[in-house]
Structures are given as C-alpha cells and as structure tokens.
Amino acid sequence: MTIAQPERATLQELVRGPVSQFMEEHFLHFNAATVVEAARAYEDLIERGGKMLVALAGAMSTAELGKSLAEMIRQDKVHIISCTGANLEEDVMNLVAHSHYKRIPNWRDLTPEQERQLLDEHYNRVTDTCIPEEEAFRRLQHHLERVWTRAQHEGKRYFPHEYLYQLIESGELEQYYEIDPRNSWIIAAAEKHLPIVVPGWEDSTTGNIFASYVLRGTLRPDIVKSGIEYMTWLAEWYSANCQPPGIGFFQIGGGIAGDFPICVVPMLHQDLGRQDVLLWSYFCQISDSTTSYGSYSGAVPNEKITWGKLGVETPKFIIESDATIVAPLIFAWVLGW
Figure (cartoon, rainbow, N blue to C red):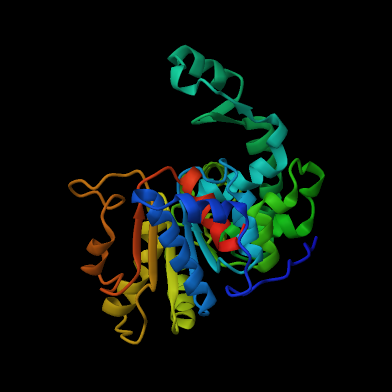
C-alpha cells in the first residue's frame, strides 16, 4: 500500500494554519512560550538540512499520537525514532483493534475491585484507555509468530521493528484495519523504511510473548537482534548522518527511549575516539518529571553538557507539561497546521 506524498512548502512559502496562528498569538510566556521557541528551533534545523530523532516514551501510541506523527514522517520532519517496545506495538494494536478499546472517563476513581473486573474482562488499562487483550495482543501474536518462525526456518535474524515492518508490508493485517491508515505512524515509517531503535524491547507485551516461545523451546532467542546490536547500528547511522547542521533530539517523556540513543554521542567520542562526530544539534524534552536528586529524566539539559551529549551553544528546551497536549502542538507548528 502506497500513500500519496503531499507537496512540501519551504519555510518562506509556508502559510500557517489556524493552530500555528493561535500558538503565535497566545503562547507568549512560561511553558507556552517555550513550546513555540522549541517548535521554531525544530523547524529551523530541518529547513537548514538537519535531521531529527524523536524519542517516544510513555503511552504515546495509545494516545493516538500517530494522527500527527505519521504526517511528520511522511513530510520528512522525522528521520529516526527511538521508542519503547510498548509504543512500537501499541500503534499497531490501535490500528487493528481500535473499535474494541474502552475509555474510562472516571479512571481516577476506580477501586481495586473495578480494576480486577477490567482484568477479568481481558482489558489492560493505560490511564483512561483500556486495550482489549483478545482483539489486540492475541490477534497480533498470531501474525508475529508466523514471521518469527519463518525467520528461524530461514536462519535469519531481524530487529524487533523489522518484524513489524514485514507484517505491514505483507498486507496481511489490512483485513483488520479499524482506523484510517494515514493515522498510523508505523505504517508511515514502514513506507519510508524509517530507521527505528527499540531499546528494552523485552519488557513489552510482544517481547514477553516472544520470551514465552523461547521458554517453550519453539523459538531461539537469537532470531531477534539485541539491544547491543541496536546501539552499534545507531553508532554507525549517527556517524554517517551527523554532518552539519547535524541531528536534533526531540524527546517525549523520559526513560530508556531517550536515555539509550542520546548516549551514542559520548560513546563515539570517549569509547571509540571519533572526535569528528558532532554533538546533538538540538535538544527538547517534554516531561512532567521534576528535577530531583539523581533523576535523569528530570535533569535540566545543561547537565547533559557534562556527559558530552550537548554543547554550550546547542539550542535546549524543557517543556514541563503533558506530552499528549504539547507534542501534537509542536508537530502542528512544524507542519504549518
């Protein structure tokens, strides 16, 4: 399946849409002003020919970030993604089981007994949204088992995201599509063959399912490439793509989705001695994690200077807010919406 590519406008030609106009008029101070400043700097890096890594933590796929992220990918505003295994799989689950999801408006008031009832009904809750086990996890499991088994029979090994790309490209999941495929960031990424790294994939639902097959003795663990292989691949990709104006780092949330890829620069410098490799050329993090003793997710960007990740002159932004609100707004700005 091929999605037609929209025409691109240069920064000079871009006529801003109502969302961007509203931001420009009203987002003038505090976190709101930082949102616009970060969006302008993101846009500027891309317009100058730079690249951008987007790190997805939290449950952004279940929050349907694909409605804006997919278009960012299609318009070449995102060049590589680092995401948790949960975000990788949950975009596909939303794609194939959306009508079976259950929203819980009063999620803050649930009792332990009500939570147990959701479990008994085969729903797994993510804040206000419950993912249906049978229609999402188990439906996907059947198809993943097939591609895993085929790789083992053929003596091949792939990264976790490559197995999902194979499913998307085969077309066999299309029978289940319940949303407009243009709103799936995984479909957009597969069409572009976008590079993805998925650190800690083992703790996702599909990672757990794969581990169960290994425990049964039906699959070998080595058919899925490891985190170390992701890091070595990322090191070579970064080295090949960091020429001026460089690569930016747009981090949604905290945790391993951001921690893993940002370390590639000091590793290249300090452990491989590649002194010609540029530092990250832009940094923005949207997070509600507070700065506290030893908190890396809440650390201010300047701390990353001491670790050899960012430079003194690197544009740096921290937006202390809800990423489900802020990320779509920044993407809307960059897209001119």
